[in-house]
Image 1 (cartoon, rainbow, N blue to C red):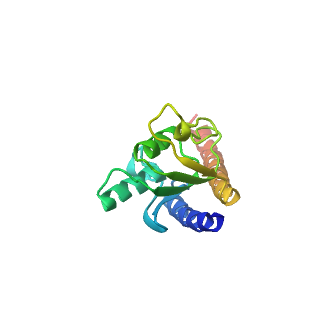
Image 2 (cartoon, one colour; image 1 turned 90 degrees about the vertical axis):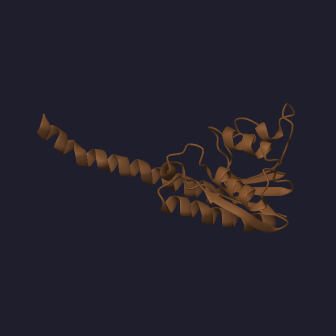
Image 3 (cartoon, rainbow, N blue to C red; image 1 turned 45 degrees about the vertical axis):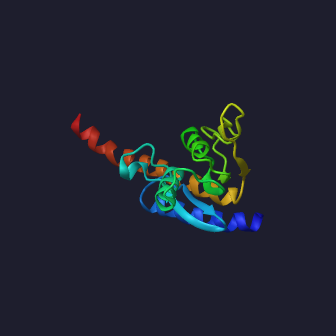
Length: 168
């Protein structure tokens, strides 16, 4: 199972790379049924001006349209970052059987790190959760993205400083 999980996670990583090419936080997802990718998605919140356009949301919307069903029974979602509460709720409502994620999200993770919505006995559906598949690769991609963003902001501030002094 681990080898298959790694193969599908590599496809999710390819989706995350697409997100990064669009200036988005590099998170990607693929939805698998019977060993076949039926839908994929990457973060699109910035480009679509839509806070709900997370990779998981896009993949599940695409799958629903393809399957002509709002239930994703017997499907596994592979995602490079642990789902947030919004996406974890979506996984429960869409009846995803299993979620496999790469990097933990220690700020908003809802599949064990901060919350455990996907396995809560208070909800009407629980998912199997597999964490840490290609975690280092997924985490490194995210860390590099945010470091680059911080460096770009610092460079911009440095560039603007002389112009601000001139105006005073």
